[in-house]
Length: 124
Image 1: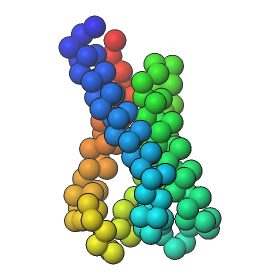
Image 2: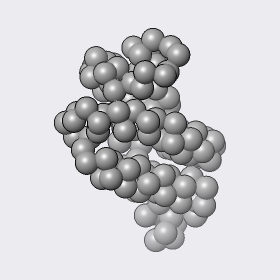
Image 3: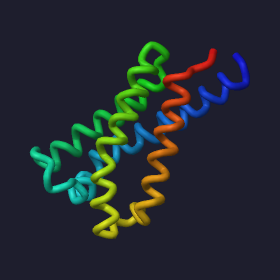
Image 4: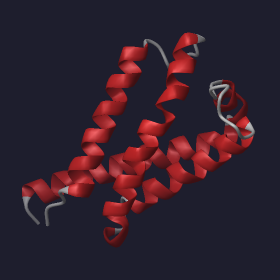
């Protein structure tokens, strides 16, 4: 393994942990996540929170499975773009750990860039 491949593997593990933990939190803090659901979402907020929790866990695990790395990465990037409106709602309502919105947005850009690098351009 090259140094770049080792670095990418380490980043994949960290990203996987972030997404698995975040996904599990959707089931332990459902009320808090439902509170930041934009009003225009046509489904039950609790249902959407649970669905997105499963998506985060699946995406995180997918980052660790070589055969699933690319599709998991693409799905997680699309997921991060799709859930950004919930972060805007959280910032507007001063939800702890979600302010300021520029920091949350920057974090999502960093996550998207990291996922893109390790999943779309993997080194062996």
